[in-house]
Length: 332
Image 1 (tube, rainbow, N blue to C red):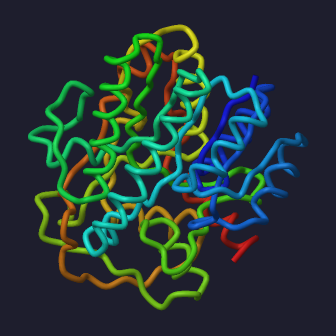
Image 2: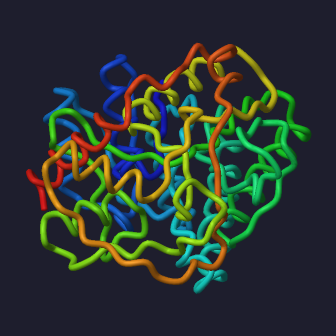
C-alpha cells in the first residue's frame, strides 16, 4: 500500500517525501516539473537512502494519471500539485482555475474509482482572506483576495462535498502559513524556476548576486515597520506536519482543517535583517508599490494542530535563515 504524493518534487513536497521515506512509508510521486527540476529525484534518494516510484505526469492528463493508480495500490494521497504564486494568479486567473481545480477533480475521480479515500490537501492561509483579527483560528470566516487563494478555498469546498457524498472519505485540510528554510543537508531547498515569487528565495538570490535588489511591496501597512507581516515556518517543521496529518487521516473519516504555522508574525524587513545578521551578508532592497491581493498581517493560532495532531513547529527564525542560505550557497 502506497502514499501518492502529487507535486512531490516541489519545495514542500520534496521535504515531506523525505520525512515519509524516513518514517518507512512506501511512496509514489507524480510531478510535471512545472516548478521543480528532475534532479530532485536523485537528491531525495541520496538524502533518504531509499528508493521510490516516480511518474512524470500532469494531473490534467487523466489517462497517464490513471496508469499510476492501475500500477500501484494507492492507499492515501498527499496533494501538493498546483500553481501557487499570488501575484501570477492575479495576472493569469484562467490558468490557475483550470490547472488547480480541474487537476484536483481528475485526481478525485480516480481516487473514487480505485477506492482510495484518504487525502491530505495542501491548502493555504490565503483562504482566510483579510482576517479581522490575528492570530487566525480554523473556524474564522473564509474568503479570498486573489485567484490562487480562491482555488484553494474552492478545492476545500469540493473536498467537503466529496465527503458529504461518500462518508468513507477522510480529508485533512492543511492551511500553511509561509514556509521558508531548507533541509539541513543543504541538498534541497526552495529553488523555483524563473524569478522567485516568494520572499526567502528572492532574498537568497539577491544575497548571492543572482538578482540585483529585493522589491519590498509596500511600507505603508499598519504593522511594526509598514511592511507586511507573515507567519514564517521552517519547511521541515511543515513537512513533519504532513506525517501527523496522514496518521490522523488513517484514524478517522470526515473533514478537518488545521493551521500549520508558528503563531508568530515577522515583517519583511525583520526577515531581511535576521538573514543579514545570521549569515553575515548584505541584501539590497527597495520599497515599491503594494502588490494586488496582499494583506497587512497574517499569522496562525496553531493550537488545534498541537492538541489534535500532536504537532508543533520547533525551529526558530535564525535557523530558517541559516538553512536557506546554506542551500543557496551549495546549489545556485
